[in-house]
Image (cartoon, rainbow, N blue to C red; front, top):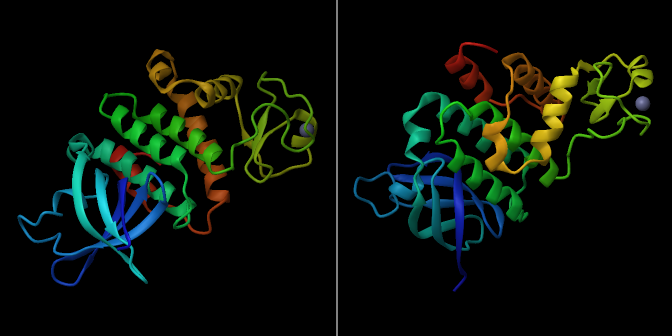
Length: 251
Ligand SMILES: [Zn+2]
């Protein structure tokens, strides 16, 4: 029997028919997988709890010809705070959409799986949401081979000084030096504070994030740079950002 067991996070769900759902899972060993969860919208169905978006669960999945189907599932973490707090929900929706949009089915990436689980777990703490999302973005981009170039100039590979003369080019994929910035029109401003903070977050352990003081304008600057970089790699905008901006009351 083509059955496999895997731990996974539910990235998104679609309703199908009267009582079923199609789940998009990010599994530990197989990357992104789509699987039906039959009957999971019926009250008291054994798959109901584990078929909710964001849920971290252990799944027994039958490998189908066109679509896999969930045979059993147990919840490891339901992350209730991601459902009860709208701000946390908006950030979590953004993270799962990033994973969904940047990954292909059956392309394993265990690092992405652990990153998502780790950041969801840390989102329980209040006030750290924004820096956790920056941490996620920087690490996720590295894990899928799109790490922004932050050490030397992404255009000429020359030395860069974190003195405020830097710019960030989404197209070049990183910081550009004061010489290269002159010939480019696509660059975004990058202050010395945002540059240093971004490098620190990209290299730090997640448990160290709370110790860092990040002024709001520095955080906003990093957000705009990473959003510009991420958008450059996507054909259409991320839907979850609209929800996030509405909840936060800013864009
Ligand atoms: Zn350069």
